[in-house]
Length: 242
Image 1 (cartoon, rainbow, N blue to C red):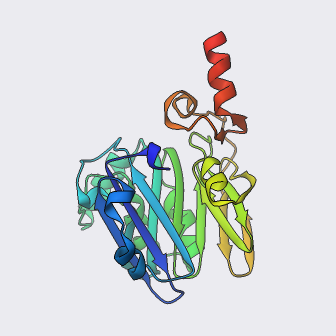
Image 2 (tube, rainbow, N blue to C red):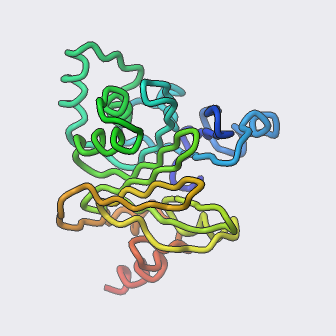
């Protein structure tokens, strides 16, 4: 999905016991060689390419973010913009939080780390329940992959299968390129949790008016992708015709 961002990139992999991070500025093909990939041992991984819409352009802002807290290690990738990130950040700083970046995504990491809920899933839900705006999150712990889409469904997030594995990605073209099969989209306001036992769906948010980001069809997505259930190429053709 290099077309979605060219500033920086990163991968976190889990071997079931530990999460390991590699990230760099620039394109994936330039940043990752075999030695980098050899260090990313494991059976699950998440990756991110960055097109900055908040924060600065630096290696500190590169995602995924990886932290270790009371709930264990967690890695976070985010597509979107959190409209209340500034207010949440100010409140967190007043209570002693230390931020390393200007990214709105780091606010969610702090909210998760400070959650008093028992267990990773409850802590994730409590954290994302406090943010407002556009967000599709892909998160990973040592034994779980978590996909989250905001209640309005501003940003896309697709689910696929590759033999016995699950795939969560921003666009269906990523599934095509690795030979995976599209299953469905993560629904607006849905949290999907994938582990060795399969996929579990939680819908912790109240109903909200669905609002899809037109820029996904106009600019971000590849023409061969299906986004929001529609062919990007056909939508663009129809926009031009209209």
